[in-house]
Length: 141
Ligand SMILES: [Cu+2]
Image 1 (cartoon, protein in one colour):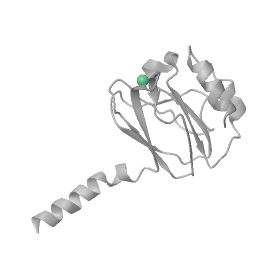
Image 2 (spheres, rainbow, N blue to C red):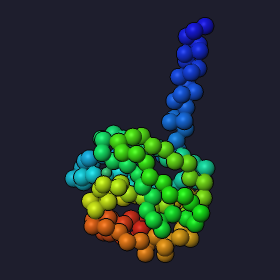
Image 3 (cartoon, rainbow, N blue to C red):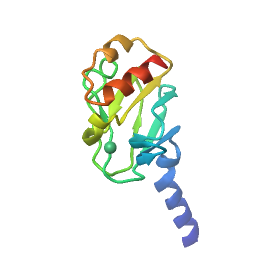
């Protein structure tokens, strides 16, 4: 009987992580790139959850000011932690890693294929290498 409870408890405990529709790894190195998200653009549906896995420590996820659909609250995850976020509002979300934004550690989430805030996203002040990476990624949307 105890075993059953343990299995149930484990299932409940880990269910939120398994429920993520997309998993992105936060990495120090991927191929020739340093400080990078394993997926830079993900397309999801409203209500879907994205999990960022802290595979290498020292990274996080921060929504960029002016880089999210109207009405979406600021979001900045703690360093070196797995983090998940459920996207409810359709549109494009621009985010980067707080300490590595100048190194181009940036990503985009597109919810429901809605690109209505693309112009606002293009006007963001990107830092360092993020500028080039963002331009490439945005032209691919
Ligand atoms: Cu980082």
